[in-house]
Image (cartoon, rainbow, N blue to C red; front, side, top):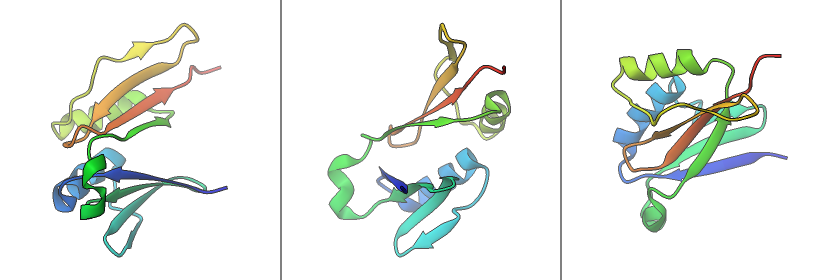
Length: 114
Protein backbone atom coordinates (compact mmCIF):
# COMPACT_ATOMS: atom_id res chain seq x y z
CA UNK A 1 0.00 0.00 0.00
CA UNK A 2 1.16 3.53 -0.81
CA UNK A 3 0.34 6.70 1.14
CA UNK A 4 0.09 10.20 -0.32
CA UNK A 5 -0.77 12.80 2.31
CA UNK A 6 -1.70 16.13 0.71
CA UNK A 7 -0.88 19.34 2.58
CA UNK A 8 -3.00 22.19 1.23
CA UNK A 9 -1.20 25.53 1.28
CA UNK A 10 -1.90 29.10 0.13
CA UNK A 11 1.36 29.83 -1.68
CA UNK A 12 3.48 27.07 -3.19
CA UNK A 13 6.70 29.11 -3.41
CA UNK A 14 6.61 30.10 0.26
CA UNK A 15 5.62 26.62 1.35
CA UNK A 16 8.20 24.91 -0.86
CA UNK A 17 10.98 26.85 0.90
CA UNK A 18 9.53 26.02 4.35
CA UNK A 19 9.17 22.32 3.54
CA UNK A 20 12.70 22.18 2.13
CA UNK A 21 13.93 23.33 5.54
CA UNK A 22 11.53 21.01 7.39
CA UNK A 23 12.64 17.92 5.44
CA UNK A 24 16.24 19.09 5.04
CA UNK A 25 16.17 18.76 1.25
CA UNK A 26 14.34 19.86 -1.89
CA UNK A 27 11.25 17.95 -3.02
CA UNK A 28 12.04 14.44 -4.19
CA UNK A 29 9.63 14.84 -7.10
CA UNK A 30 7.63 17.57 -8.75
CA UNK A 31 4.57 16.37 -10.64
CA UNK A 32 2.71 19.18 -12.31
CA UNK A 33 1.99 21.70 -9.58
CA UNK A 34 2.57 19.29 -6.69
CA UNK A 35 5.83 18.99 -4.76
CA UNK A 36 6.40 15.56 -3.18
CA UNK A 37 8.72 14.53 -0.35
CA UNK A 38 9.21 10.82 0.17
CA UNK A 39 8.96 10.10 3.91
CA UNK A 40 8.94 6.29 3.80
CA UNK A 41 9.36 3.45 1.36
CA UNK A 42 5.86 4.00 -0.01
CA UNK A 43 4.82 7.20 1.79
CA UNK A 44 4.82 10.75 0.47
CA UNK A 45 3.94 14.23 1.74
CA UNK A 46 2.51 16.31 -1.11
CA UNK A 47 2.36 20.13 -1.01
CA UNK A 48 -0.39 21.57 -3.21
CA UNK A 49 -1.71 25.13 -3.60
CA UNK A 50 -4.21 24.67 -6.41
CA UNK A 51 -7.45 26.64 -6.04
CA UNK A 52 -9.61 23.52 -5.60
CA UNK A 53 -7.76 22.87 -2.34
CA UNK A 54 -8.29 26.38 -0.87
CA UNK A 55 -11.02 25.33 1.60
CA UNK A 56 -8.64 22.78 3.16
CA UNK A 57 -5.64 25.08 3.75
CA UNK A 58 -4.43 24.77 7.33
CA UNK A 59 -6.40 21.62 8.10
CA UNK A 60 -3.69 18.98 7.69
CA UNK A 61 -2.46 16.94 10.66
CA UNK A 62 0.43 14.52 10.08
CA UNK A 63 2.65 12.73 12.57
CA UNK A 64 6.02 11.44 11.38
CA UNK A 65 8.09 8.95 13.36
CA UNK A 66 11.73 10.00 13.63
CA UNK A 67 14.87 8.70 15.31
CA UNK A 68 16.70 12.04 15.64
CA UNK A 69 14.19 14.49 17.13
CA UNK A 70 16.75 16.77 18.81
CA UNK A 71 18.83 17.08 15.63
CA UNK A 72 15.77 17.96 13.56
CA UNK A 73 14.59 20.57 16.07
CA UNK A 74 18.06 22.14 16.15
CA UNK A 75 18.14 22.33 12.34
CA UNK A 76 14.68 23.91 12.26
CA UNK A 77 15.61 26.41 14.99
CA UNK A 78 18.70 27.41 12.98
CA UNK A 79 16.29 28.44 10.20
CA UNK A 80 13.90 30.27 12.52
CA UNK A 81 11.24 27.55 12.63
CA UNK A 82 9.80 27.14 16.11
CA UNK A 83 7.67 24.42 17.65
CA UNK A 84 5.33 23.70 20.50
CA UNK A 85 6.82 22.29 23.73
CA UNK A 86 8.19 18.75 23.45
CA UNK A 87 6.03 16.31 25.40
CA UNK A 88 7.11 12.94 26.75
CA UNK A 89 4.31 10.41 27.02
CA UNK A 90 4.06 7.73 29.70
CA UNK A 91 5.42 5.15 27.26
CA UNK A 92 8.54 7.27 26.69
CA UNK A 93 7.59 8.61 23.25
CA UNK A 94 8.73 12.20 22.73
CA UNK A 95 6.31 14.25 20.63
CA UNK A 96 6.31 17.81 19.29
CA UNK A 97 3.97 19.76 17.03
CA UNK A 98 5.32 22.11 14.35
CA UNK A 99 3.05 24.42 12.35
CA UNK A 100 3.79 25.39 8.77
CA UNK A 101 3.09 28.98 7.58
CA UNK A 102 -0.56 28.07 6.92
CA UNK A 103 -1.18 26.38 10.27
CA UNK A 104 -0.91 22.79 9.03
CA UNK A 105 0.32 20.54 11.84
CA UNK A 106 3.37 18.36 11.26
CA UNK A 107 4.16 16.47 14.43
CA UNK A 108 7.34 14.53 15.07
CA UNK A 109 7.41 11.53 17.39
CA UNK A 110 10.47 9.66 18.60
CA UNK A 111 10.11 6.30 20.30
CA UNK A 112 12.40 5.60 23.25
CA UNK A 113 15.56 3.66 22.54
CA UNK A 114 15.41 0.08 23.66
